[in-house]
Length: 634
Image 1 (spheres, rainbow, N blue to C red):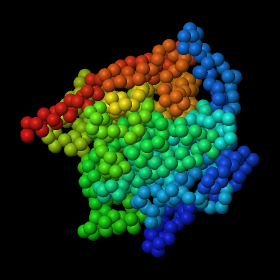
Image 2: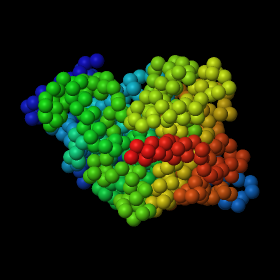
Image 3: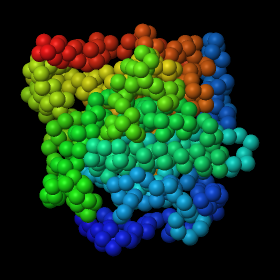
Image 4: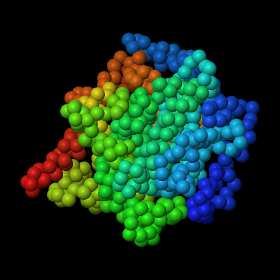
């Protein structure tokens, strides 16, 4: 792959490259918005920073319109709950604005610095927002595919990546109806991912303005010297995107006073972190955290010294041998995108899952989220934005961890996972969590809890137990903890567990039999992939066979999020069972497992204390072992 050194030349000569130079392949013809041409279906929107042109897209065969939903017509006490149709099927118009810049390009002198607000749309006016812009720089080979681990990455990647996509039912500020706004931050463990992977057309057709935003990843977004002046750039990118929405979303038919942050995985962590940051206050009124938690040890760096050490390691691997930290930082600045990504991938990880993630710096993130949430009920701390909080997980969220390891077998089986592999993984897990005291006892406790005892030769059962271990450690336990602590700290909290198996009731499934409810399965439902025209789907999803059950489940799941965006309450108006908020001592959640119109009350059931024994094991038993050892030593 050819790597451009134009950034290095411009940095040395004080020049800032203009869009749309592709630093990954300088010989590649550009697909910039500026080279597109307006067509008959285009629509123009005037902003204070310029004029932007988008496109009208028709979504066919939908059982709703933006302003009328058959699910709203079903009374809660109705015995026969077939939905009242709007019409048999509807063709619904949605307006898309793709690749809209929300910040100046974070390149050259703006590299490894906070994002700068965009003063004017670039290029000749109007700005043609007709194509997806580049995704942020990342190692695309490390991005786990949803169907095959060898899928090529569809989008161009570039450090010039601070763009967002807007999908709206009405591209007019003069419209009679204004719509609630969902700002979506993608996942990928702060290392990979893109806003472009989640087209918002179908979700917008439900009467929501959907914004999906890129933010800088890995070292480009989170490299830090351990102080309050460096690092967390990806987090600051997200805030600037939220500010852009406040300033301009009314022109797209959205209500700036009704913004809900929705995040998945790392995006869910980010959404929660914005609740703690005083600088993000008043930019949103609700948060939905999907498959991620702000209190998760695996998602933030609590000690700035660790962030500093990781940056110094990166410098050494890049050949930066200066003695002063600032000079090492400046040396890293001169290195190419590819060199930085290659070095980051090479460095052994001593603590946590990744080298570069959000750092608790005392400014943007004032303190460890776990400490803040525990201190609020005691009157020792405050949360900047204690807004309503919707959170949930998938039954097999932990499957994404094994998808990252290409040595474990083929996608259809992953049968190279055996007990020896699990023991090695748990030992490394203990090392990365800095369990230096009584590490052997902790490792033994984890292995014992998730060992498949009946038959050690049953690799399928061992694999399933390992996925459960990963799901509990990385998702179930921290998400349950976050929900409980947010409830105790003043937020109204709703929790769900997605147990719906995509592809059921069909002749064939596009998932292997071992993968029931995957890490991204809730996103397929939320973004309406079962209804999405194939030409709008990311390529790796275009050949998936969606069933009628999938469409029913997706329709209901989107309804949940529309209810939350509209009313800050996801309850079903038609269900015989009300969705009870989670409270500190009554851990209610919705068990979502819906596939048929036969009984609307079966949309899910309200249950309590999801996997409470495993949650207690990770959230209480393991910390208590460490606490006892520390007390004995002191």
